[in-house]
Amino acid sequence: MEDLSSLELFFLTCGALGGIYVIIRLIMQVAGVADDGDGGDFDADLDGDADGFDTDQGADSHFTYLSVHGLSAFLMMFGFTGFAMYNQSELGVYASIGGGIAAGVAAVWLLGMLYKSIYRLQSSGTLPLEAAVGTTGQVYANIPAEGRGQVQITVANRLREFEALSKEKTPLATGTPVEVVEVAGDAVVVRKIDA
Image (cartoon, rainbow, N blue to C red; front, top):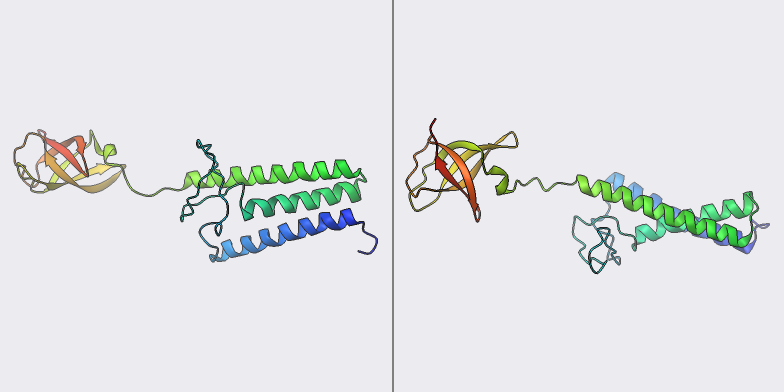
C-alpha cells in the first residue's frame, strides 16, 4: 500500500466504495430485506419520457441511472478498471481515467438494461376486461333487464367471473349461454347465444 501512487489509491478507493455498496445491496436483496425503491434517489427514467425524469418511487420502482445503485456500479467499475489499466497495463493517467470512465458507463448501461428487462417480466396479474370481448360462457347469477348480474367466462385459459349487463335489455337466467360483445365501465355486456 505504501508504494501506491495517489492516483492508484484514488482508483482503489472508488472501486472499494462502489463495490461495498453493491455487495451489501446484493446480500440484502437475496435475504429479502432490501427496500422497494432506491431510498429517495434522484430518478432518471429508462423509458425516455418527455421530461426524462420520473419521481415515482413506488414498489414497482426499477433501476435508474442517477441513483445510489447506478453511482455505486459506476464507481466500482471506474475504480477497479482504472487501477488495472494504470497499475497492471502501465498506461498513462489519461488513458487509465478514460478507460475507467468507459468501463463505469458500460457497467451502468448494462445494469440498466438488465433491470429494464427484469422489469418487463413483471405483471400485475389483472386481466383487462377488453380481453373478454368475443369469448363465450354462461350466466352465473341472473342478469335483470336493467341491472347487473354475473357471468362465468373462460379467458386466458382460466374460468373467471365478471359483472355483466344484458345487451338486449332482456333478463337472462342462470345457465344461459352468452357471448361478451363489449365492455361498459367495470362490467361486460353480453348477448344470449344458441347453445
